[in-house]
Length: 366
Image (cartoon, rainbow, N blue to C red; front, side, top):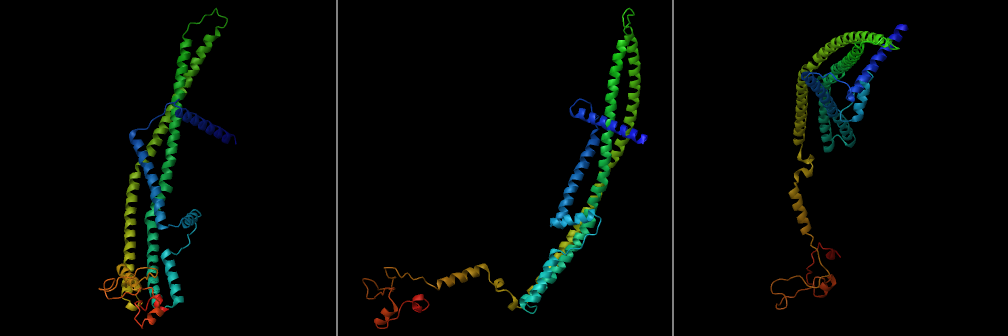
């Protein structure tokens, strides 16, 4: 129990010393040991690798599983160290719906037969997607995740330890500097010739004792500084070796990236092959099963609409002037123009003359 209390008090003292040193450095009241340029470049490259690896990992997870709820569920299963339940892909779910629709609407009808063919193709696409997700997760996501959860955690731990060693080293330097300044001051006061006629000649003795004490303090500070410098150099070497291992990490990630591209190429090639087979099956169907909209282009549809409208003329029954008649009609000709607002009864009263109103007009239907 006594040993634990001493260790606890020692750890608290070390923590307090580091906190004081860190605070004084932030306010510019203490000197800080700077690392060399090569070491700083290694740190910057390691931080950049970690940040971009996290972004690539997260976006790849979004690519493989766009549903955020499913991603959270898979993350929880992984943290609980439990097997992730199998989940059907969107293509397989669509194939299931199409097959059920064909079974209910009639598998022997043209629409039902086509639904069955498309459902089989979608099922193959879903299986290919499942294989791609599984391959990409093993060959690409797992190495990136292992780096973040393994190597990077080790690097971060050693970097924090190096930071503590540096704070201890700088605290020892500051303590030695203060001890030397106090020793020099005590030495200057001790060199003064004492006046034994004074009422307190003991000031000279106290000055000499203080000089000896500060001399011991300087020796102790120098010893602590040598130990702190040795521990700092050792920790800096360990951290440097780990940071230089980032190059090997890049090589490993490069190989995983090639495997990811290969699996993605295989997946899209399978999708293209399945859809090409489906297109051939649908193209070989009889013309009776084809949708009429496939054989009617947009220009033909517009032309048919224009002709249909031209066959239904609009009659202006409220017009006061008659439409132009054949040549010779009018005020100077023999022809007679009947106003087109005459009714059918008026036409019959005039001797059964043929009405100019076509049989398809609303008036003729009356």
